[in-house]
Length: 281
Image (cartoon, rainbow, N blue to C red):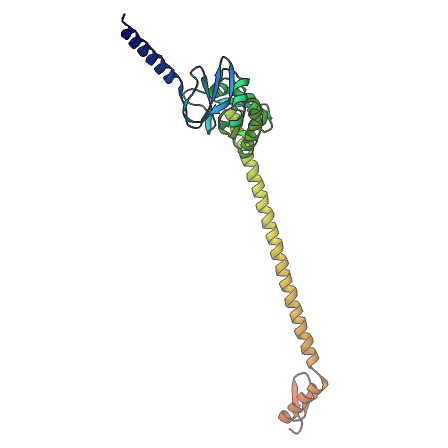
């Protein structure tokens, strides 16, 4: 081989090797994610933000989502719902969803703790495996009826608070929202629930009837008191009128009326029960 040919060969090999390392040293971090860099020598403390990066070709990357992610476990074609416990020892199937993200300042620590796992691995292999027990630790404080047909906002608020605390300490995950979105009782449990619902409705109806009777009696009492007060007021008014009338009949008024009668009829005397005789006739 000529010297010129050898040089050309070296250049070609160098170009190929250089191209290989260039390709290997360019990494793209997905939107809303952070990249943790690691190699056989350990884990770098510096993370990579979303976008394209030139990195050491001997480094590898694991991604962790710092944007909002959704974990949904529901009853569909594949039943991924979970069974949760209640305070009255029932076990009820529930659909669940959780909005979460990894804490940016903790992703390196989290990766070191679960070496070899990225964010999705940790959720799939670790978080999902403990969800049932963690959720049941909250729902065990509520009755089956509260979980099934009650206002679940209180339960969901407590779930969010509890899982945020637990998963924050264990996995470096911030839980933004955790909710039981539906429940799926089996036939036997549904029958029991329907019986309880019917009993509750009957109780509420009876209480409503009692309240109606109570209100009606109270209305009648108030009306009777009002009618009695009207009669008292009328009696007082009549008595007052009689008093005023009695006080108005004075001796002077009587003499005046007698004088008016004399002027009109003369002196009047009475004879017998019905006879009236005028003097001078």
